[in-house]
Amino acid sequence: MNTTESAQYTPKDFKSDQYVRWCPGCGDHAVLNSLQKAMAELGIKPHETAVISGIGCSSRLPYYMNTYGFHTIHGRAAAIASGVKLANPSLSVWQITGDGDALAIGGNHFIHLIRRNIDINVILFNNKIYGLTKGQYSPTSDKGFVSKSSPHGTVEEPFRPGELAIGARGNFFARAIDNDLKSSVEVFTAAGKHKGTSVVEMLLNCVIYNDKVHESVVSKEYRADRTILLEHGKPMIFGQNRDKGLVLDGFNLKVATIGENGITESDILIHDAKCEENIMHYKLATMGGDLPVALGIIRDYAAPTYDDDFVNQLKEVQAKNPVRTLNDYLMNLETWEIK
Image 1: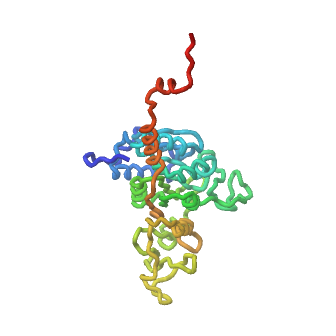
Image 2: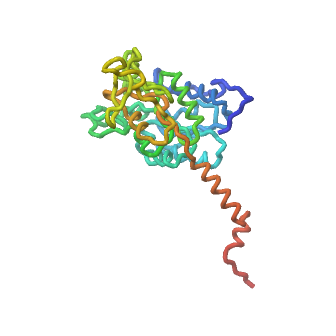
């Protein structure tokens, strides 16, 4: 990723001249605005940025960016983005995908991109529905969800993006709410600075086919008590009155109230996003039910990247190999002289 200290950018520098074709009220609008603000803060030149997408409502986003872009085919954005990054390592590469595009047909590409740790920033729009194809259940739809393709309720257990990302040995995972622009910009900026694969799950609303799907946690009425915004190095405290926190109960996390049963702020766990061991990050990424949903940067561990190792290996092989041209290669093979 190349940044520049001399050039100053604004979100407008990353806006294309295309009319934005998403439904009014769709969470995609907010994510687009947050991403453009984050790119301006990162200071990456638009012509040094590539935005790659698959298929789905979210995958229209490259059209609205004043950067290089590629609207690819269903589930293959990770493969194309990997090729773009390896062919031109200096580019800042962003993959835009949805819960269906990334976790159904694109599931294998998703986990192997993360496993390889290629320096690509994945933004996963999770509205728990197939919106573009008119409301079928997706890999993240809750069990029992009634849709056009599951009229009696789906009997499948859903994927949890954070569980997959960390299970695939991911080193960066964050989560934000579509209409929380401040937090969204912060996690996108952190993702852009992270060296390696970053995955940001956006809890997104589809006003047409799955309206208010995340309402129980993102509504302003409930958000303070049902979500926790994690900050590296700070106690994991949340709640309307900032009087609740996370503590360990054996090997499990539980909510404790500060001031009750002898609990003080010093008993609350400190968030360590930089830790190599991922067990706590896994627990935080999969919270829900009686535990608050974790927002913010859950894991941000620095590790060697595939693209750096690939380039270094290539240089080593080239230094040892006498072949420099096609003619050198051809003349290295077994040859016959015909008279």
